[in-house]
Length: 121
Image (cartoon, rainbow, N blue to C red; front, side, top):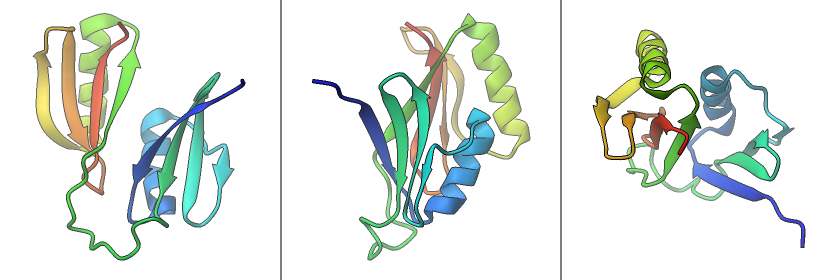
């Protein structure tokens, strides 16, 4: 069986979310419809932004998903990404700290979904 893992993040406005994620990831979407947009992250892995499922929810509904961006480079790379995101005005929920698996920080996208940056394990 050939399969791809698609991590879906529920958002209020898929095109706006795609601009946000595209800017952070330095990528362009691989597939686009008005309510569903994906980014090809590598062989067998995609990030999907979907606004069609929850059109009846208000923008202030808390989100519960977390996207973890596992990066090479250790603490210096995690800190560099933190500085870059902070300068872009990304909402930071927790500044860099050691979480047992290495340095990490936690941010939020405009819909309140959590974004973690951590070292590749």
